[in-house]
Amino acid sequence: MCQTSSSTPLSDLIRRGFTAADDAAGSDLARAVARQVEARAGVATQPAPVERSSRRRRLWELPRNVFCPVLGTCLTIDRLRRLTVAVLPDCAAADDYELHCRAIAESARRSELSERLQRELDARFELALRQARAIKGTAALVAHWRQACAGSEVAAALWVTLTHPDCDAALEEQVQRDIHMLQHQAGVGVRADVQRLDALQRENGTLGRELAAAQQRTTQMLAEKSAQIERQQAELVRLRARLITCDTTVDELRAQVAQLEEASPALRSRQAMARQIEQQQARIRELEMRLQDSRRQLQAQRPVERVEAARPPPVSVADTPVPPAVAAAEIAGEDLRDKAVLCVGGRTASVPVYRQLVEVRGARFLHHDGGEEDAAGQLDAHLAAADLVICQAGCISHNAYWRVKDHCRRTGKQCVFVERPSASGLVRGLEQASSAAAAAAQVPPN
Image 1 (cartoon, rainbow, N blue to C red):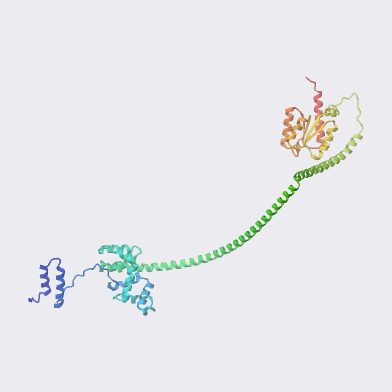
Image 2 (cartoon, rainbow, N blue to C red; image 1 turned 180 degrees about the horizontal axis):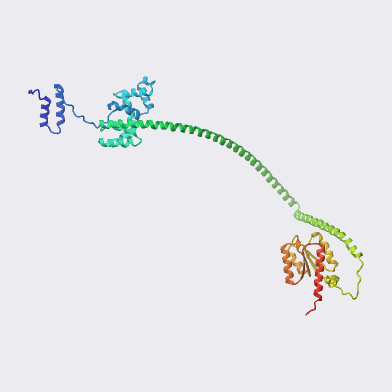
């Protein structure tokens, strides 16, 4: 074995020899051998640079100061309690803070609890871990962490960043700072959320009471409507039954009528005759009433005629000329003799009086009620047969009035219009017609 000076470590000589002789493939082996020789010789060596592995770090491999933010952010307290109590039953009675401290202490070493926590966190953030496999380099990991801090997936980004192979001490320090500030902000947000929650709970209570009252009113209204619908349905059933009964009765009556018609074929004609008889009887009663009214009017007029008959006749003077009006009145009977006088309108009860006044003067009496009961088509026939028309305009229709006026204008027949229908009005109309006829007779022909 070759001797070496005390100032030159054996490892340096060996490293120099290997460095000059080896190539790129044997350099690693040379360094490993050098470290083994230095360890056997008890020579102090310089700390070798830390080589990063491509394997993700486990929970127990992380620095102790990151256990608190990892367990407090990435796991809920209920889930942490279930995992811890399953391994450490004595922590069942511990409060949340003591349970948190016990889990931090167990995470510093590889234990059953730390392995369960590792599996729980990997399963919870499985999708984020798969996506993080594409991150290469510390710079890319820093950008990923900053982007995650601006979003809502901070817990998944915390676990992915701290366990990533490219996470160095500076990034760990930055992650702890960011998590610390986020926890302060979360505390402020929690207090504001608690206040909002209290307000929402009060509002929810008020709305709940109003909703209960509205539901109670709705239930009551539905019950009332249901009762009303039931009553209406019962009434509908009753009416339907009544309708069926009525239909049945009608069918039975129709069958009876058909049987009666078959038994007596002349039943319909007899019924028609019975209706005609009833109508004739009603007409007879009406005519009897009119006759009685006429008799009463005649009885009322007889005292007046007796008074006029009792008056002494006027003294006639031969040399005194006779006035034209008196002469016309004296020849009124001769002017209307054998003529047809049509009286249009007038009261029904006064028709017998009209007839008597006309027939006393030797004329033939015609009457039409002006469209009240008689057909309007009969008026033209009466107008054609009349020589003189007396129209009582106050009790006829407009159509009859214009028909009378148009016919007399076209044919040149004499027509006298009386405004108020009465016996005296008819007398004045006859006198007016006689006067007009007398005046026409005195005019010499051309």
